[in-house]
View (tube, rainbow, N blue to C red):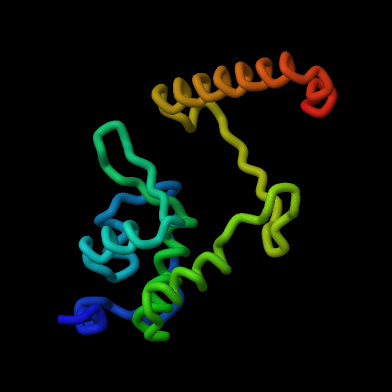
Length: 154
């Protein structure tokens, strides 16, 4: 059975996908939302480096909105446009590739996200504090190596 013969197991969307207002989604939620089987999700994850789920402390993969957008586009390329994997990879990287350092992304809007301590779990606050400490440490090391960076970083 070739790759396209699996199309009968994939539900093609008839209307634009409405993504629920959640920050992270589990694998089974992604499969239901997009209409793909778990093995298809795992295969695409192995083929498309841009799909980058987080792994929870329990080993559960968690996907964000960007991952969902990428997966929907991959599904469209492979099953509606009948692209081969290599062509779909190129097209996905054109659409979702990060801009080069120092160059703004032409379609990217500035998004301001506000967090309050009440919205974060204790573990998340610990992780943020640890990340902050690591960033401050890196910043201090960079400043020590090159004092001119001190002016740039402030």
